Length: 536
Image (cartoon, rainbow, N blue to C red; front, side, top):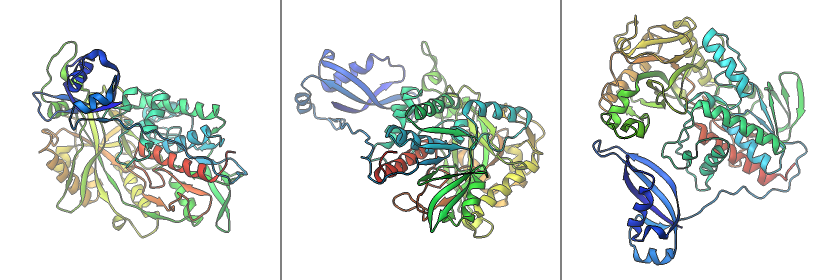
């Protein structure tokens, strides 16, 4: 197999143009191409007048060694076909099946890998199955009735189920776990283009179907997925895990517990702290969501829309995203986070008297606005006290303020009014896109001064990159506080806590930051259990 990189074609090209370009690069007749496949596809929009798609292509041809000898080019090489492999099973017997707390990406992927390898895992999820969960979330957005166990953060699929479903990650991947995650998602209902597109995403509407398919696959392979089952205590003897308590009443023996509870499991963090499980506060980021017209972002990134047949430029390229970062005069990092093209800002609260927001998009990203979190790095030095839970207290205080300022609804403010420290009275030309009730409030006063100043400086700097970013009628909403876990549950190089048999995993434990990295961490922990134990 030959791999061709940097194969460039105009965005208006047809599918048949790809093999024709392959033949020209390899200097062979097109009929010598047996097959070809896209390995990577990205967009080069640096020159707005000539936007290109850039491909990496694997191609199979006759006499490939002869062609490689003749054609000398840095963009042509022999393709390396590396496949992911799960480790051979260990020899230690399991007296009980491995238990996984949480059915977010880390828990689901850990459970799927173990189930396929014959370990019959049991996944315990405090929330509901995804269908019931969606109904409760819709009711919350419409009527304000919050289910503390099943909401935007808790339930089958985890917090990522109500998000844009981004799949990009910066995690180094020499063992092809990232590729394995994408393959599993595609096998369970995701668009196959996620296997090669540069910035893949799924969308909340498709992701909800995928997690259901993964759950069914786990059950078919001998595993269990139990909803409405929260781990409320752990039982130990001499530093060794012996069992756990479900819903404050049912005790079960456990030899290996994968703790994949997600970044919002504050009650679980508190329980672990009381049980002397080693953990520590970690830096994260907080801020506000900002909305702009998607057309404004498209024009900044792609240039003016142009009509082609049968699609326009923006339709060919899809809604544009952005990624922005800067350093402020206060020496704090400010950056865009979880950018949702064509998306919505949603009420993502989990506790009575507290309010948090997040961004969400469907697969088609057809909403009229772009939104992203503009967040500021905070560290344990900002938190009250030195407890491992100090970051949780910091989050909760900001969320309680947001609830108070919004009178139970999402507090919103135009950016121009935020900058002038005055409450807004009406929306401007940017039409709001929210899931959940809203109320005008003075977010500038709601935040600590260092956060308000940093966000203002950040938005003003981002104006130099995206024209209109600091427009007066951009819509701010708060508070974005669940960007990542405020704690790290300590584990050693074998992914095990000081409490033997307890395996902290995923975003909630402080070892991931998004759907893909959490799923990869779930696979890592599954591999460790596989290396230790023989199938159950």
